[in-house]
Image (cartoon, rainbow, N blue to C red; front, side, top):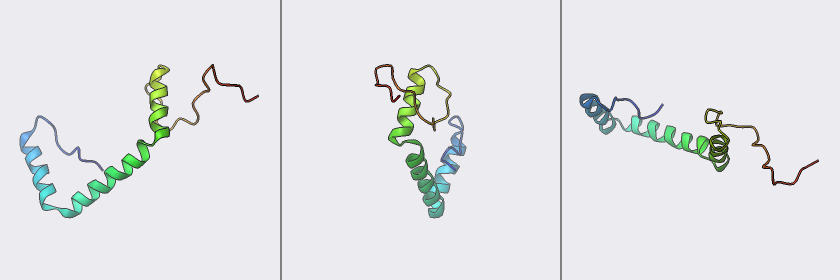
Length: 79
Protein backbone atom coordinates (compact mmCIF):
# COMPACT_ATOMS: atom_id res chain seq x y z
CA UNK A 1 0.00 0.00 0.00
CA UNK A 2 1.34 3.42 -0.85
CA UNK A 3 0.10 6.93 -1.41
CA UNK A 4 0.03 6.66 -5.21
CA UNK A 5 -3.75 6.63 -5.42
CA UNK A 6 -4.13 9.35 -8.02
CA UNK A 7 -2.87 10.37 -11.43
CA UNK A 8 -0.89 13.66 -11.48
CA UNK A 9 -3.00 14.92 -14.40
CA UNK A 10 -6.27 14.28 -12.57
CA UNK A 11 -6.98 17.21 -10.23
CA UNK A 12 -10.38 15.90 -9.05
CA UNK A 13 -8.80 12.55 -8.10
CA UNK A 14 -6.05 14.38 -6.18
CA UNK A 15 -8.68 16.40 -4.35
CA UNK A 16 -10.60 13.23 -3.47
CA UNK A 17 -7.43 11.48 -2.25
CA UNK A 18 -6.51 14.47 -0.07
CA UNK A 19 -10.04 14.60 1.36
CA UNK A 20 -9.83 10.88 2.12
CA UNK A 21 -6.59 11.49 4.00
CA UNK A 22 -8.04 14.43 5.92
CA UNK A 23 -11.15 12.48 6.89
CA UNK A 24 -9.63 9.06 7.69
CA UNK A 25 -7.15 8.83 10.56
CA UNK A 26 -6.86 5.05 10.13
CA UNK A 27 -5.89 5.51 6.47
CA UNK A 28 -3.21 8.03 7.46
CA UNK A 29 -1.91 5.58 10.06
CA UNK A 30 -1.79 2.67 7.57
CA UNK A 31 -0.04 4.76 4.92
CA UNK A 32 2.46 6.01 7.49
CA UNK A 33 3.19 2.49 8.72
CA UNK A 34 3.58 1.23 5.15
CA UNK A 35 5.97 4.07 4.34
CA UNK A 36 8.06 3.35 7.44
CA UNK A 37 8.20 -0.37 6.62
CA UNK A 38 9.29 0.37 3.04
CA UNK A 39 11.97 2.75 4.27
CA UNK A 40 13.32 0.23 6.76
CA UNK A 41 13.23 -2.57 4.16
CA UNK A 42 14.50 -0.87 1.01
CA UNK A 43 16.76 1.91 2.22
CA UNK A 44 19.21 0.12 4.48
CA UNK A 45 22.85 0.87 3.83
CA UNK A 46 23.28 -2.61 2.34
CA UNK A 47 20.28 -2.29 -0.02
CA UNK A 48 21.29 1.17 -1.26
CA UNK A 49 24.90 0.06 -1.75
CA UNK A 50 23.78 -3.01 -3.71
CA UNK A 51 21.62 -0.88 -6.03
CA UNK A 52 24.40 1.66 -6.54
CA UNK A 53 26.91 -1.10 -7.24
CA UNK A 54 24.54 -2.71 -9.74
CA UNK A 55 24.13 0.63 -11.53
CA UNK A 56 27.88 1.23 -11.51
CA UNK A 57 28.49 -2.22 -12.97
CA UNK A 58 25.87 -1.71 -15.68
CA UNK A 59 23.17 -3.95 -14.16
CA UNK A 60 20.43 -1.45 -13.26
CA UNK A 61 17.66 -4.07 -13.14
CA UNK A 62 19.18 -6.39 -10.54
CA UNK A 63 16.85 -7.05 -7.64
CA UNK A 64 17.43 -4.86 -4.59
CA UNK A 65 18.53 -7.82 -2.46
CA UNK A 66 21.73 -8.85 -4.19
CA UNK A 67 23.22 -11.76 -2.25
CA UNK A 68 26.78 -10.45 -2.06
CA UNK A 69 28.43 -7.92 -4.31
CA UNK A 70 31.58 -9.19 -6.00
CA UNK A 71 34.88 -8.20 -4.45
CA UNK A 72 36.58 -5.30 -6.20
CA UNK A 73 39.78 -6.12 -8.08
CA UNK A 74 41.88 -4.34 -5.46
CA UNK A 75 40.54 -6.30 -2.48
CA UNK A 76 42.75 -9.07 -1.12
CA UNK A 77 41.67 -12.56 -2.09
CA UNK A 78 40.12 -14.71 0.63
CA UNK A 79 41.67 -17.89 -0.81
